[in-house]
Image (cartoon, rainbow, N blue to C red; front, side, top):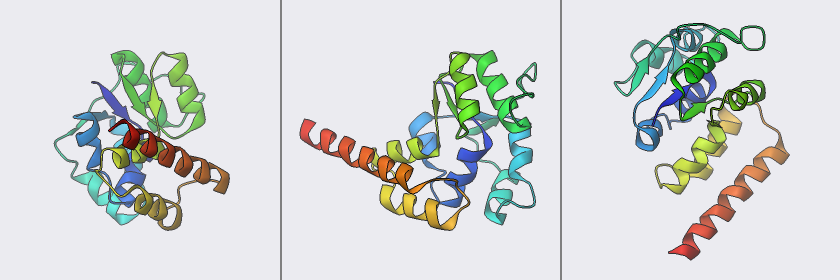
Amino acid sequence: MLVISDTSPLRYLMEVGAIEVLPKLYGDVRTTPQVLQELRQEHFPEVVRAWSERTPAWLRVESPHELRFLAQLDDGEASALSLACERKADLLLVDERTGSRVAHDCGVNTIGTLGILQEAGHENLIDFHVAIQRLTTETAFRHTEPLMRRVIADYEQERQRRTHRL
């Protein structure tokens, strides 16, 4: 499975202490030099900046051959999406709606931080509710209360469905 990540999922998973779910869910993950550069920005938390300086072996850095989508997206998103389209990735980790829409237009499936946390919770890799609490209270993750209620309800519904299947 070829998985490529934009900046925000890496950032927020790092901030809530759930970054290690990525190799457990997806194996190797790729990102771009532009994404790493964004993770090193001064306004990002120190834990994120430090992590981006010494990335784990499961995170591979690769540049796209052609940097597209700059008119619609920032450098990190554009580079991750360009790489995903070029490599025909199975999945792009991205939170922003525009990036997700452009990825779908390119034939690439997407999942965001919330979806990753849901998957990790269902696989018993994290405590989903603790991760969501940390995400919404300890980070700059943009969300609305209705969105978070829906995400939690979806998680609980899927958990019940899985429990009944067993």
